[in-house]
Length: 85
Image 1: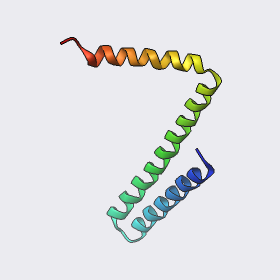
Image 2: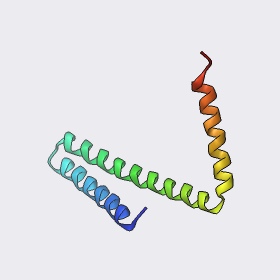
Image 3: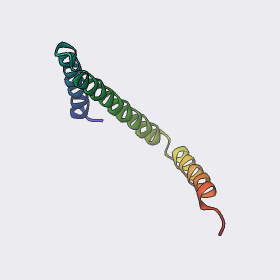
């Protein structure tokens, strides 16, 4: 996650907070709800990017374990969704 992505997520979160406050001040539940949704989306984006960074770091630290894990997941998905015809 780049610094620009982090800044973008924080800016979206701040804009959502402002939109929520505007909704409260103008007695507009629609703006208030949209502001809360915007904040939640920004926080979720930040969390996903953080999780991806963690996976990337772990994969770089131990590539063979990551490969074995990916192969295991692929095998299970194939068993579950592949089926016999």
